[in-house]
Image (cartoon, rainbow over all chains, first blue to last red; front, side, top):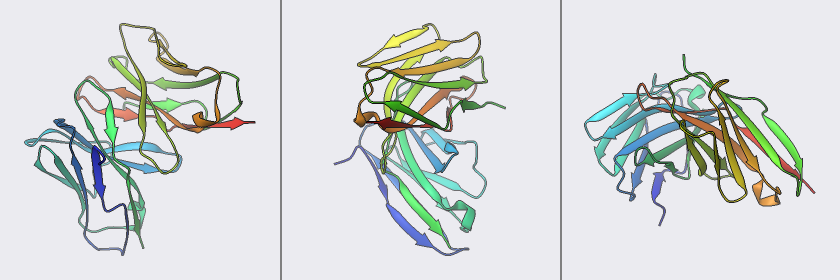
Length: 111
Length: 112
């Protein structure tokens, strides 16, 4: 089993719909992250969390919200999806100051 | 604001030659730098890291060089192989708020 699991792996939705991307980890790490990847733009940080009571905005948090339900779970929500949120989303964990461990990604298409 | 930039979006290298991928950062207070490799259809994977108290660190076939004076980071891959074909990202830990910020990535093509 993967250390960092993202669901769903692929989702197609329509403008205005609410979408939740879920992430769970078995690494036992306190730190979890959500990144967005667009072609030519690299990975941009959306939100990050250092423990269940500590959530921080990243570079591009507008239009997104997160929930840290437990140490092992960190979900990303789009309350009202729009087409420019079409992207590949990655969840990652880390044990500061160590390396990030990424999931396999969730590809979201908003029509 | 803080930024992490990469000099070339694409790099083509002959198989067996050495590859050098460059990265620049803007925050002089950063003290931890990481290189990641992303193969097609997968999440990025850690390659090597370096702290600001070092200027060079070596791994298996990879070397990271850090020049804090000009805020420049490079990844050297020795004897490039077909399996090295991927997108390479540098990432920087921002001391102020512990965010990890990525550059835009360089796609490495290996020529036969």
